[in-house]
Image (cartoon, rainbow, N blue to C red; front, side, top):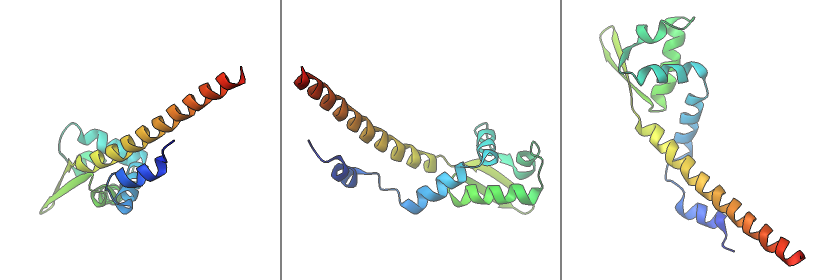
Length: 124
């Protein structure tokens, strides 16, 4: 049986641990996920994004800064106007990372299933 842990080291996506930490931390907040859901409909100003939430503009700005630091959104500043848009490349990095580990675990479970079938056949 091949060592899947060695395979994981050889073929794991190249996204850095720090990038993934920032991304998953950014996605951990229901407020930030709601902001992202709103941005799937198109670009929006900070004021428009803040409207449905019961929090101050500085609090919303902090959430936006976390999303921007994780490269999930881009904020273009033009004087007093701040326009936010999605940058889906960060999410595609997470998707690749998750897909890799999903394939690895499916392989592990397939191997376990085969082993159990073999072990059960040997008992009879």
